[in-house]
Structures are given as C-alpha cells and as structure tokens.
Image (tube, rainbow, N blue to C red):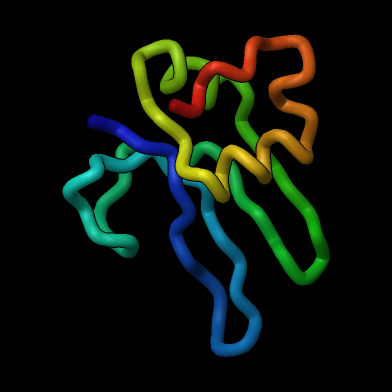
Length: 86
C-alpha cells in the first residue's frame, strides 16, 4: 500500500518536509516512489505537484493525517471530494 507522508529534510532546528509517495513498510527517511511537494512549517509555505498527487490518490494512496491537513489548508480538496482519508 502506498501512502502520502512527510519526509524530514533541512538542518537542525530548521526542518522542512517533503511530501512523498512512499510504501507503508518503508521508514520515514526511506526510499520514496516520487516527491510530490514540500512543506515549510517555519515560513508556512506549501508547494504541491497537483497532477502527481491526484495520480497517487486515484491509484488508492492514502494521505496521512498531517498531509491531509496540509493539503486541506492549501485548498487542495476544495472542488474535489474529501473521501481520500479513510
């Protein structure tokens, strides 16, 4: 099963997170299938590759709770159904 989750990058005390599609059996810093965006909690910036995220969601990938909240705040699910999190 594939999940959309955060992968920590950056340096000490200055973390940024990549939003990645990754197998559920992989660890947090493990090999990802595709990088689909990033989130900077300090600057509160989000970049998301919408076609790539839609591709993985249509194939059955489940976003984690945190990724779901980040995408919801970025109004990703505004015109789409929000049934992706189960």
